[in-house]
Length: 212
Image (cartoon, rainbow, N blue to C red; front, side):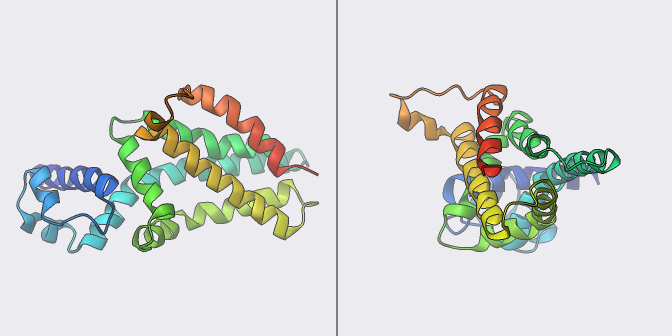
């Protein structure tokens, strides 16, 4: 059993590495077992298909990350309800953004996962996007409900656009922090330290979503 678990982890690590660099469509299924040091039959045994392997790669990180983000958002909402107040906008953003940005420091290969998720937004093919959205949807619903509670005076259409502005900004900044994107901007050096980025990003986003 331990050998099977190790084989599965090797395949997931290899798939994440190659998906991040080649994209889902650009990845040859034969390249993954070569990098993992296993037989191609192991992929069929553990996952069955390239799509199922992609789903497993996304689930491995998104499920625990989403659990943390949802728990933190719900805690902010519960505290506000107990006090008879609206949930503070800044506290909601911290609950969502801190775990999101801190993820890049959790493991050496976290940047590969961030780049892979970036493909969900930038690739013409929608395979990664559909798999990502399906996994992120429960979190998305809680985020929307939380900001409806926090900002009931903001018209629905305006609030939804502002939330999408935030998601787009998060994706872009994560990509800059978790990839070699910054190497193309050597004339404009950026401090990519997580705490520094959060200290700059949270006030900026708070002002934007709550603007009158």
